[in-house]
Image (cartoon, rainbow, N blue to C red; front, side, top):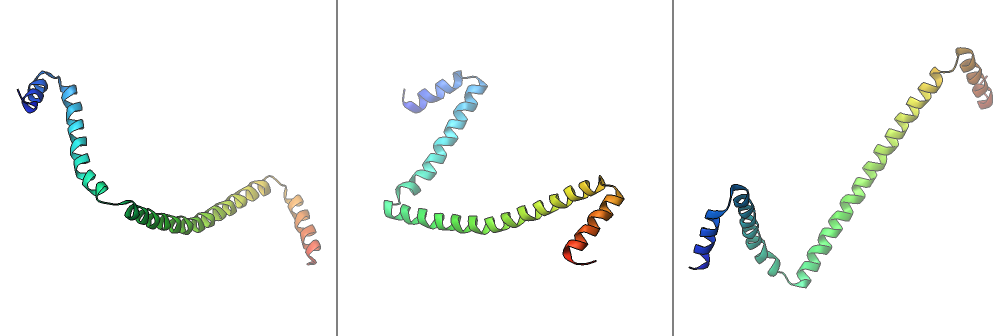
Length: 111
């Protein structure tokens, strides 16, 4: 009995869940067969060049994203500051607000 016949006879004796595991393993073997030729065709110098190129692209994307991220954070902080101020002002009486306004105007020299 050759290896193929032995595998086929063993498969006949497996239950459905074991067959599914074998199918996953066969899928892995097919994937590895497709990927292996690519990985073995590159020498260390080519791999280093690809790595450097990808690293530079990653760095550029990260730096571009950081500016947008910082702007979004500042906008969010500003919005939360407004919410906090509105909540704070909502808890202060009208006469107290008038007094604060009056003092601010006096301090700024606008009376």
